[in-house]
Structures are given as C-alpha cells and as structure tokens.
Length: 104
Image (tube, rainbow, N blue to C red):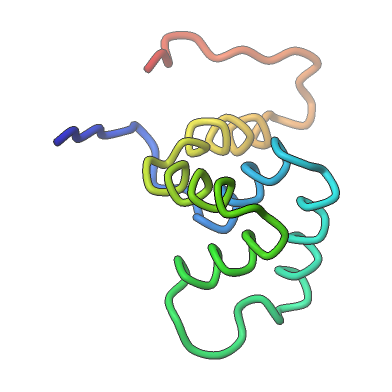
C-alpha cells in the first residue's frame, strides 16, 4: 500500500479523463468535451466516477479503458492539471513569471 499527499487539493476526475483522452487521440478528446458540455454525459443516476468512465470510454478499446481506469485511480494527471491551474493564475500585467521554491 502506498499513500502520497500532494500540496494541492484533488483535481476533478472529469478533467483527468479529458487529459487522458487528449494524450490518446484529439478526436476522442473533443467528442468527450462535447459530451460533457452538453450535459448528456452526466444525466441520470450513478457516481461521478462511473459516469466519467462511461463517457470517456465510449470510443476506447477494452485495453485503453482498463488503462484509463488505472490512470484515474492513481491520479496520474493531477499534477499536470494543477500546473495548468497555477499557470492560469499568472498576473495579467506580468510579462514574465516564475515561482521559486515550490518543488514537490
């Protein structure tokens, strides 16, 4: 058993699935984004986990679906999403930006 605590809050599983699909195939990524945006992907009952897996795996092979489940369960894309979030907080008037001393 392994436990790891990050310096940031958990990232949404829906976004982590999107990152997985973006790495696999841009067409599948955009189909997923469209499904999430229209709201049809998350209508009805079920957990966020099962709805995310169901929506993201619609056009994936069995093996890629298993890989998606693994990547989501170990929060593989969490650090990448946190990087995007902190980059989005760059002050608008800054021409250059760096953050020192924030190594994991």
